[in-house]
Image (tube, rainbow, N blue to C red; front, side):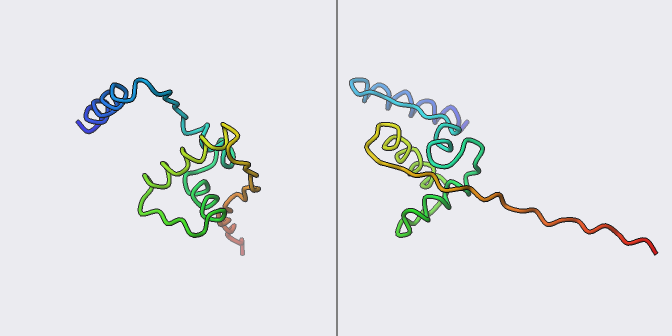
Length: 100
């Protein structure tokens, strides 16, 4: 049900703003512009928070919207962006049981 409502709102927005260019960025494009294509949402959010420490997100939707806006500015050359080196989160190793 909620997907249908989103499609309706999307259609209304397209109708209202038909005179303006509408740009869509798939998630991988947003991640690639900010960090790397296979980055997680958390890694993208952390990267944004490192660059803009005063920005506070109440939820993932806000950080996603900020990331899309940031991608627009990066892609159009309105903002110079240097990607930081992403450090992979290390998973704890399972210790092998010692034989006695």
